[in-house]
Amino acid sequence: MKRIGRHTILLPNRPCILSGAAIAGKKEGEGPLGSSFDQIIGDDLFGEETWEKAESRFQYTAADLAIRKAGLTHEQIDAALGGDLLDQIMAASLAVRELHTPFIGLYGACSTMAESLCLAAMLVDGGYLHNAVCTASSHFCTAERQYRFPLEYGSQRPPTAQWTVTGAGSAVVSLQAHSSAICRCTHVTLGQIVDMAVKDANNMGAAMAPAAADTLHRHLTDTGRTPTDYDLIITGDLGRVGHDLLLMLMQERGMPLDPSRYIDCGLELFSPEQDVHAGGSGCGCSAVTLCGHIFEQFRQGKLHRALFMATGALLSPTSSQQGDTIPGIAHAIALEAAP
Amino acid sequence: MISLLFNLLKAFVIGGSICAVGEALVLKTKLTPARILVGYILLGVLLSAVGLYGPLVEFAGAGATIPLTGFGHALTTGVKRAVQEIGLLGAFTGGLTSTAAGIAAAVFFGALTALLFKPHPKE
Amino acid sequence: MFDKKAKPGAARQRQLDRYAQLVDRLSPRSRLGQGLLRAFLCGGTICAIGQVFLELGQRYLDMTVATSITFGSMMIVFMTAVLTGVGVFDKIGQYGGAGAFVPISGFANAMVSPAMEFRREGLVLGLGAKLFTIAGPVLVWGISASVIVGILYTFFPW
Image (cartoon, rainbow over the protein chains, first blue to last red):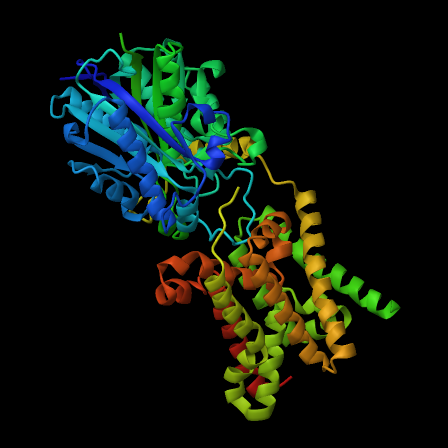
């Protein structure tokens, strides 16, 4: 069995991440991580007629660029794994339509980038695929109309609310060791649903933090590691509230995180002046941060081992209206600098 | 001139206060704006039915008619008048008759605006 | 959870309560004083503008009081539609909160904004159907309540 402990999957072949591409919107481009993105798209419609098509184009552009940066052609990709926040994950389906490759559509809310990387790394490690491309995207305008209100509706956002990131990230996972590879995938810990009865859709950090704590706890227990074994632990989009909650929860579990070696993508992506309240969110949040900023850190040799753990709040507008609590999830993948 | 300024001030203070109560409900309870608006219109219908809202309109003018409670008041006064004129049928015709201008304006201007303008991305 | 009668165990309930307290402690709050002041100023201003139209109608346009009230409401609806169209009203709403949505301007904005947003889904099922998504409940419950008042008034006029 390629497993250790109860839930952690070992990747003995250590699949490589050959390349990553991050395509971000204007506001994201103006944030602190702006320089790490491959492209910044100023037009929220990206030249398309609708925001849904624009989001799809974000995702296709990221996938296409990642494949080209890996020195591969579309024909050399054995499968695409991806998703987004739209109903029936249309952005991913329409994007992958252009790639002509088998497609595994995923829905993990904002955890999608980690979910796709985990699955791709396992499939590649198992020898079922040579090269897989992972994608995830979100768009402020498509998410807003689906989950909240029309753009021109005058409503106040509470301070715990998060800002859906416009952007798409893509990474190519491959079995071939390559000198230009960014990093290798070593362990996968899949998330289980944790629901601590949070109902407030404007406080998703609170809904997701217990799931992040649960996955991190299981990962560390299974691998026998401590938080300090990682140069950096990266959570998806817990935002200000979830970030602080995770620090408290890990403290309580006796596995305290070092705040200087723990970052949350939702907090990294925007500066406080950008008025995004509790931080960024959406599939694109962790996707562009990983494929832009984190991969850049690996390339520059500033990171040797990192744990990427994207979190998702698995609510729908219907479940919210029916008064259900928000199920949280977090998937983790351990990354090591490629020797 | 003085009476004009005084009328504006009354509308400002009463209207502003009705809105501030709504904001307190937003911030202090888990009520969504949509629920608060439904609550406001029901409150307007009720207060008007028991005869309390009419005097407020006389005092504050637009300060009482522009908030959504005023919409409820218009529904009730219309219904009462129609019932006096044509009996039970008036319970069904009066409300929409007296609010027709506001509703038709919102529908018409809404459709027109949607044809003329596109939504703007938020910064 | 699929058994409606089953309550979470006592230990689980304690855990949930503790977590709810923790969330409450770490979640930033809206500033009440600032919110109330802004709602007051914004709502007051909108009502005062409405009053300008009431005075205008009564003093210069030979309107009855009832007609001037309708005129005032319509003008606020019209101005809101324009401000929503040019992308300003959402900022007023963000600033004023209830001060923007409690006046009839909120009703108008709630109809104009989804109509604009869903224009791309077509004129019938997009614009036409979505016009009432946010404002519909107000009409449904307001009209229903007024019908009940009317029925009562028919049999027990007071």
